[in-house]
Length: 72
Image 1 (cartoon, rainbow, N blue to C red):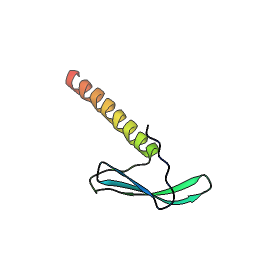
Image 2: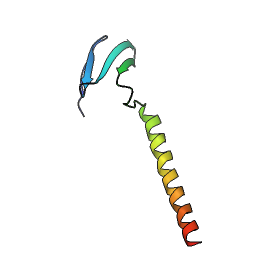
Image 3: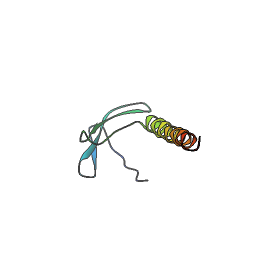
Image 4: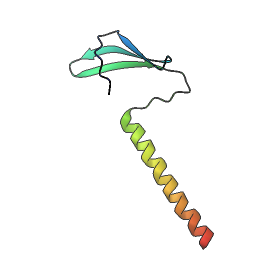
């Protein structure tokens, strides 16, 4: 993991097309802004994990059902 220090209104660039800017700092909370192309999905990690888990469950469920239909 790369750890960087940034102050308010300072930014960093990822992969030449994603910019992350520190917008505000209040106590322990930091508000960031993300500028990225529309085809680059940006998720909070907890939402990303939920999506991955739901996708995995859907694949597992569909596979079981497909096997049941195939072998009756």
